[in-house]
Length: 375
Image (tube, rainbow, N blue to C red):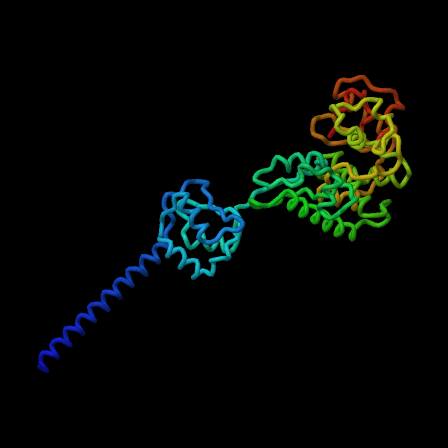
């Protein structure tokens, strides 16, 4: 009886050991399978494929989106275990995430979603754009959400928290990154803040004795400099001409301001009538700066306006060689000679001596040639 019990006990122990070994083997196999699941690249991904976390999505919802895209790797319980291990469940950030063939693993994907490493898109504000061009480009940008399309400029500035402020020149030309779900208001807020910070920093280091009473006037002058030349090394020289004219009480007489005053009616030509028709932006009929900026100046134009080049030049005219460069002159006689050389290059007859009075070349050639004269 005792010996039979002993034999039965030994058999039971043996079975329990076998069971324990089997459980351990299954555990080891399961752990290895789980490790392989989380660390191996997801199979079957296509180039440019993305995963998306939408507002309000649960982890189960995100997993359902992945399954719908053909990602069958791993059981749901494995994804859930991995999410808990990474402290990602309930903490996935809204946005789009790249699924890179041969690279993206379940672990790297959930880590990216937990950290919010979303796909970034680019929107560039180009130096010299006016507010109409900026808004048109924003309206065409994808996948940006469009919240400003139906707003006029006044309502737009109110939405940005700056009611009553004119929008021209207020957004710093740079490249801004955004993610799916961001809006045009988000981009504009950042661009407005960037301009405020840049202008304030440069104003604090401005050259002494400038004929500018405020950062806003510096912004206006910079916008005119931005539109007058695309040559980086000329910006400070152009700014110097305008600063000296302001100091002497001379009219700025610059084409871009006239063009801005014409607005959407501008057809590519400046006519004599445009130069003599008074508008708040016609610097041939009015002294001083224009009432607002005329474009979005970049940092380099702002620096030029606040640190203009020293010298005695009061005039400039295009070289006429296609380079976009200018000849700078201190006297009207020198300027008229430069104008004649410019016209000779273009094989046009010279104007009378008293025709050239502007710092640029708006009166240096017949009005119908104004388009060719723009930098």
